[in-house]
Image (cartoon, rainbow, N blue to C red; front, side, top):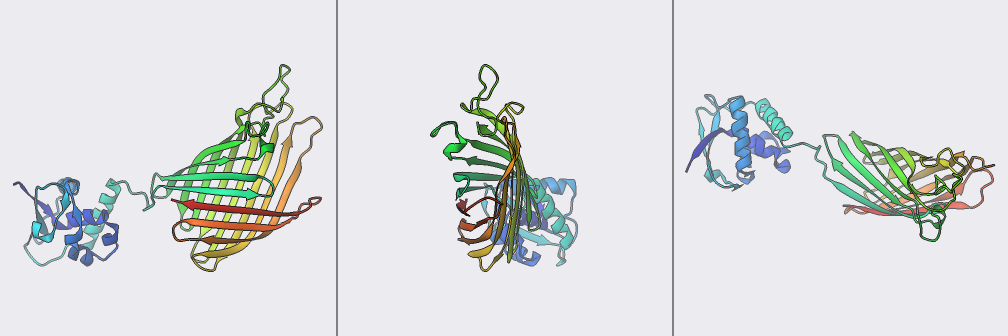
Length: 332
């Protein structure tokens, strides 16, 4: 059996960096909990590499005599601790080594991949399921992808055909309690582009187009122990047939904010605007589709499910009736 002598604090620091529950304790707790740390072959190899770069097992420091075994959980009995003195290693040495080990293992801020699905219905857009996925790529950035499955017949070219379908990518940037998410998406269908062109290059209103429109957007979410808020701004611009008759652009934006009365319940106010900002139909004109203002209530569970109901008045001049919207979702 081959025995390797490795600086004890170095191995413990690397193992602690791989065991968050232990690494969060103080350094003495890390040392005393060594019997519970999983130290595998890769941990020992990383320690040897770091030791070769910056040797630290000098007089007065501890070393670990590690048997060359298969990866597994090793107890204190598997290590022979030797010490030339009772002097403890400097805490900064362990901190720096742990940081180096964490960086070597690809730190992503403690976040994991996630996927959120929502079922939505409101007074204007009808029923539309949506999803958003997040994949951590660095300490404070996730790669983001999303989709909206629009099901309203009026957004297609017939009953169930060429329905508007939206898909996009972007990033989620984390800074304190704020998440900033710039994204860009494509709509597919005929709603913005007017469908396929006839022999005279006039939109027919039938037949869906890939890349019907483009959607740059920005979402910002803030959340702490007592307060929550969200801003969304997206611009839906015709991409296909943009300079032909029947192209449409829309601005869609909302802002809401509320108070968290508990971990399971919050309530606040919501404002939302949808405006047609460009219209190339012959004789067509732009107009505000709606302005909604009203309260919301939200219920959530600890395992990632939530439901939000929002209702109020359409305050746009000339519009009649109230608005309402319901979102139910879950994250996993």
